[in-house]
Image (cartoon, rainbow, N blue to C red; front, top):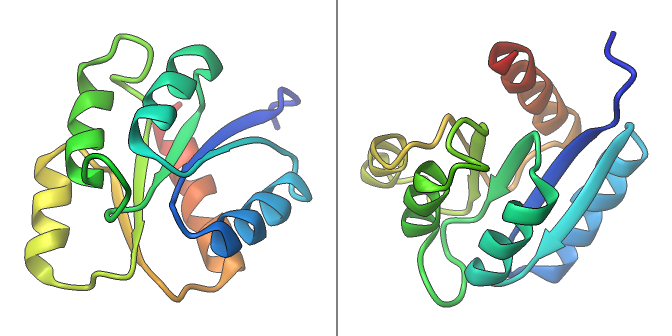
Amino acid sequence: MNTRERKLLIIDDDIVITRMVQHFFENNGFAVVTCHRAQDGINKAKEFQPDLILLDLEIPEISGHEAALIFRMLPQTKNTPIMMVTGRARDSDRKKSFHMGVDAYITKPFQLDSLLAKVNSLLQTAR
């Protein structure tokens, strides 16, 4: 197992969910940075260079779809796995997310253990 701490960026405007997910992942060996607005997340991604991005579809300023497209264009994040975490379960949102470069899609509400398993799976695949 890699001893380097894995870095996770969470971009979600729901502060309660963000804090819950942040604490859970920190307790599971991740370094976590959180943002509640798209542009803040894009700026943080450039400096933090996360191993994975958890991105809400409905965030202030620009949509999660647009943010995913920007992440795919940035040199620092073009290969970083992105998991869309959203309350929107429509198939059209899911398809558009994958079209915009998202690697996985999970709907709220979710079980934290299930989210961790999906994150670990994405990180394994990315190596």
